[in-house]
Length: 141
Image (tube, rainbow, N blue to C red; front, side):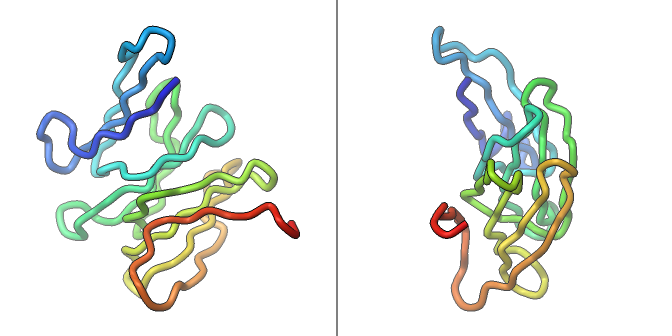
C-alpha cells in the first residue's frame, strides 16, 4: 500500500489524514483522519503501526508525535510536546522510531521512541539551526 500524507483534511484546519492507496488498482482504499496533526513525515514500524511527524503551530495545534495503526486508523500513542518533524525514520534492528523535532519548549531535539512499547526513550538536544529530518547509517552498529 501507499500511504499519502494530507496536510489538511477537508479544509479542517487542525486535522490531517493519511490516505491509503492500493498500488495495483491506483484507488483510494481508506482515509485515516488524524486529529490535531498536519502529518508531514511517516515511517512504517512493527505491528502494523507507523509514526507520524506532525507539523503544529504551537497554539491551536500543540506539538505532538503520533503513532497510528495502519489497518484500523486507531491512534496507538501520542507523544505530547514534541513535534514538527518533516521526515521521520524507523530502525528495524533496534525497533526504534526517530524524529528531528523542532517544537520542544527547550529547543530542538532528536526524539527516540521505542516502537514496541510506543514510549519515548530519550531526547537528544540539537543545537543551532532548525532541524526537520533524520536518517541513520548502519555503519558501526
